[in-house]
Image 1 (cartoon, rainbow, N blue to C red):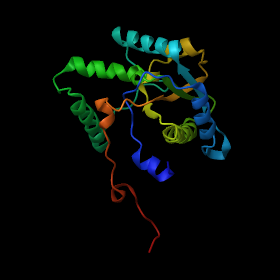
Image 2: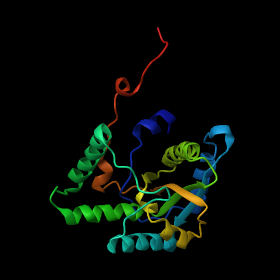
Image 3: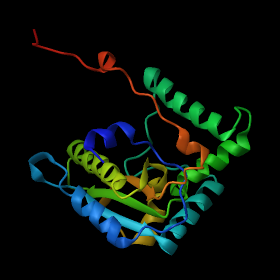
Image 4: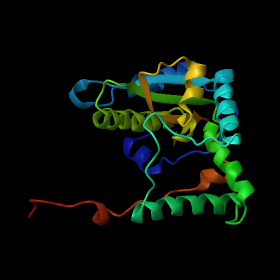
Length: 223
């Protein structure tokens, strides 16, 4: 697959087959992705790949926490709510998904079930967790981590795999640490659900919209 095709056709996959992803395949994807750029070549990312019973334990722990009414909160505290146009884009994505899934605005039960699926890493057979040491400056570490996340998601397409950048999977950091042994000094930025797409899953039909170039680019100094 050509790079331009990968960038323009990739979509978030939220429904997966149960087939496991071989360790050798995940190794190749990550090995290639380690060529992602980082400021001053610091390479801040640390990568934890979870599958099988360990991933099931994280899923179970996340759902149990939700069931007891605990509020999810990342290593960086509570997320700031989106406002204005950003909130509109978020809502448009949600409405698009609910429409494909047949979830009505009034159906709180099905909405909660779908939310729980996010905390289960969309039931993908593997999850890639990106973290960085707490000694690093957050702004740069986050920027660099975003670069390798994008790279992993694109390289995965070459292997017939789908991905979904997944924040919910690490929103109970103590659950992840209990299973993986990750120390407190390593702060989790994001996770990636990864596996073979279930093309029959309705959520996978969603193609999210993008803003036009005119709306997001300011050209300075050009004739």
